[in-house]
Image: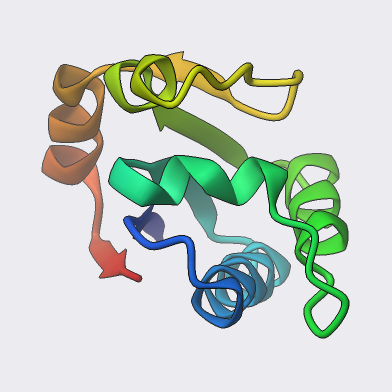
Amino acid sequence: MKITVVITQKNPEQVFTAFRFANFALGKEDNVTVFLTAEGVEAIRLDEPDFDIRGQITAFNSGGGQILACGTCMKLRELDDKGICSISTMKDLYDMVLVSDRVMNF
């Protein structure tokens, strides 16, 4: 199954839960892509002691998942992808949603 996970928030618990779900789906051998947009692009720099977000992101990337981030949102916040994600566009998000079996929003 093809799953797209869209993260629009920077709330640490929501980001952590989104990546836990994404990693679980990868474990079920689903094809999973995470798209970060709006405040969600800040997920790549969250460092919260109660939620191991960096560990979840590392596991997702090493498990075969793909993380894309809205280039406009990254630029607005003067963020660097730090090699964690690929800079992307709304067209990319549209194309992902079009071919996905499921879309999850966090």
